Length: 535
Image (tube, rainbow, N blue to C red):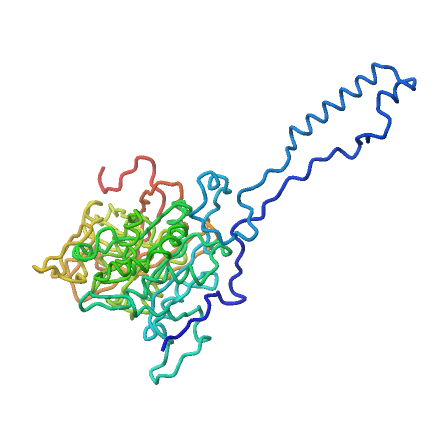
């Protein structure tokens, strides 16, 4: 039995939508000044009035000349109103992709992207959605326009249907897609249903009246960082066709499914004009590409037929890995963290917490300073001959001796691959270092985020994060490290990246009278400053 979904509409009293196109303000009609009147055809002319009076000809000439000059100046500075190409009455649903180049140039300069400009479509299922609410709620709030699509009405273990008011966000049943072919062996037909989410969002939502500029797709176990997502998308002109996301971390996954495909778990961002064209064509593409595995492959194939290729943004993370991903998280690129995925497939990212508590703990620092989240900084404690590597808001590693920055930028291989290659090889899309089988006592001393406090407001916010030592066993450390238990890091909330080239920040290890605690200050690097112990 086919279950029909309710029309897609945001929660009432939570989100207020506005028309994307502001009303065009017309110039007032041209009219004379209040102190001047034009003579009618039946009135005596000015010349005839002057002829019967004692007014001399010179003042009359000056008066006429002044009047003509005033009239010409008024017309020059107050031209009649122009007809704006953006004024629509019954045409507000017009496809944005049909605007000509000239009309696009007449659009007002785009203000900074805000959360109201993004519409999220999240893929879920009737079995998983009830368990994903806490994870989605870590980054979602009522200002975020989000719709979750499931395969059937969610039910409890006792088969009782879950009422809609149990969910903080709209949960919709996807349209029936059972008539589409699917021939991938051992695959999941849900890839067809999920690929059509863009089409359902466009068809069920009156996009033109809701200021939508971007469609963002993800899974129910995807955690987005909204601030960084907006700033990443704001680099691109939403009026053009853009397909943005990231590949898998695994070479084998990309080789099997595509190097030019945005992986859905890491998030896929599609500009609105392109999303509309994709929505009109996705069904025919699904029929042609029946042999592909997932939804992201079908979307990528259809966009390829439209002539669009992937724009790779390193801040999106698929996390095609198992085990301990601390090595990946502690070596994040300079690009802002946009998304994380597969938390239920990896070990808890904080070894002293469970999975859900670990993600919530990380988000406590991310929300304090999202632009600095996981940003890597390296500084040197020269008097004690130590190297300090910071992954802000997550962990700090303290090495004995001098470690070069380039060596530390490689990802520490603490994890297992999602799928091994045919010969058991592990090939990643980034540089790696270390081995999972190494002696743990030869690892650096690792400190994980303990707590974080802030003061002030805006970009003047001062933040102090504290990291406590995690000791996996009894190891004999040298005196310079074995007594160190806490590290306090002070920083200022990072300003937005737009129109600024990315550059790593520097840090200073402050003098201390105790070996129990270390204090570090983060700052912008000086001009020409090198991150090295000896220069």
